[in-house]
Image (cartoon, rainbow, N blue to C red):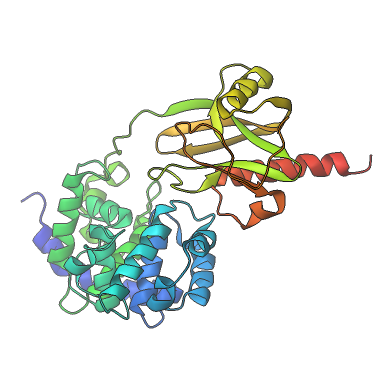
Length: 372
């Protein structure tokens, strides 16, 4: 009788819903609960803070106010609107899902969880969130905040993100959920996790569920959930090289799958020596170019999956003259190549590392142009 979830369930929902009515943040997707707006918000909120999402959501809804307008959108415009929000596959999946929904005759996203799971970008959490928040369907929506909250409420000794914790959390949410209140209840759990049941310093004294929290009673609240099992990080030193000649720049297109898929980028490759010249000359030979000069701009740092990259950014000049015709270089493992005018770069959807490089280049050139 150590963990008494049934007893906890009897007392907690009413307190939680009362707390949510008093403390819910005024968020644009909560004003009327338009199913399309809820769907957009849930895609944007995956692994991203609410404060970061808000301006992106407002710009998105102004440009694509409904499912049909998004389904008809050009992918490059969708990518540009998403730029800076990260995890770019979310934007591509959102566009693909909208097109598929419109193709099936929907004016807005369906509200059935199982139907939503058929579309790109919809996993168990996103499907549950859209079904319950947009349609008030009685299904669980277990994100990281809810996992953490339930792990403490029931004192579940499982690692964050584990399938065991997700199962336990889902079962608890469904047992606790009041009939006909799925929309408010799921959001209340998420809100409590985001505002009160914080990862490192939970504000237990402000929590409406404090009296029912087993971890609080046992003094394990800061130890639940158990730490996530993370793979070791891989550190990489690299050169990032922008080939530039007569106002044209050479960019590489990312592969079809993986981080920043199909986006144009300033190419980067492992740093074999501390001197840029031999590495950049070797890189030029791989492309069928000859390096006339190269100038280091500084360093940028970025991460993807479990990799941590420090890239020394170089602007290099080739001896050949670029033309607007497709560059005749051998295909190398990274993929395709393209030429762009310098003034075009700001209109492209570039990965964050490339945007950091361009900002660094602008700073260096401005410093050189400034009078002493």
